[in-house]
Image: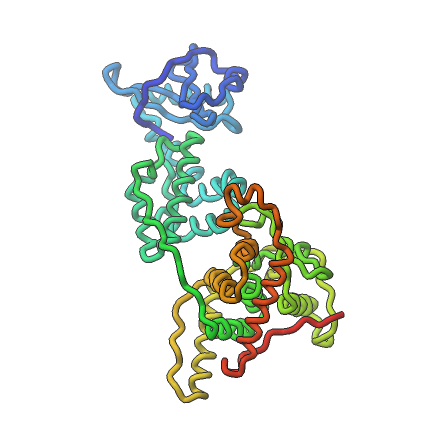
Length: 448
């Protein structure tokens, strides 16, 4: 918006009418249509086809440089007629020596419509929801550190230095820094493509944060048992979420956003739909008895019937979210949930050490995703074939990628079930081992 540096363009002239505007389309480069009746009135068409009405003018005589003012994007409220009327008003200001780009009207429009704080919603609704599977995480990220720095600053006035200041907030968090960088880069590129800013402050020359080193953290058997016991103290929803993550080797959001409609109680299977899978491929997860028992307990919890027998057969709901605190949206607050789990693990370890009259063991830092890597490593220790491990993790690389993935269509369903049952038995052995300080046992399924 406002004045900007002009580029060389091929001039096209004609009466700017609705028919003329509708006839214009993307050509792969930015181009313009100039009105042949109202001097300086034009239509700008970006490389992607976004259309905006503009006013080109000079202040200070023919020797001065031309400036270009963006009236607004084509569409309500801007039509050829309303934009033409606005252009006439702007030309009167120029005749009086007033630069339209410096008027209070322009500043107010930018402050309201293009303030970074407001544009987050515009970008989320217009792009993220349609194109990014993890759009909610990206939106939450934008509303944290970037919003703290940029606040209500108009998008067209945000500079490279502003972006540097935002990224500095992520010092020591390389993975989040790269996500913030990619999200902001897409946001400004999208705004540029819509003609709402002249140029993105995150151009090709802007250095991206360094790549995140591959993680290798794997929990030990003792840590797994401790994590299971600690999860058992958290209650619904995070306790059963963490225990299902340990048993199924699924991703965090796959479990946290689980719906009852994805579960088949009769066959003991979980079908992850393609629109929730990271690789957009539907995935069947055979549920070991221990996983079924956890879901049984969740179903009993959601019934809110304190007088019901604790070990009776239970029917799972057919609809709704498995883990929710609102009844409408999946559970959130994962960072706080992990903090509670860490605190519970530490407390249990101190309790164990006090009973054994020894120094408590230090629990190295770990992330929820490390449970998935731990399970994959455990599969290999149990002698499970690599192809089966890849199938359980729903990976399309390695044995299931490339040409092999095209011609190898075996779904490994039976092998996955055998492997996950073996893994559940392994966990049960760890957790029920008295050498692991009387850790709470895995719950077995109650048969109807």
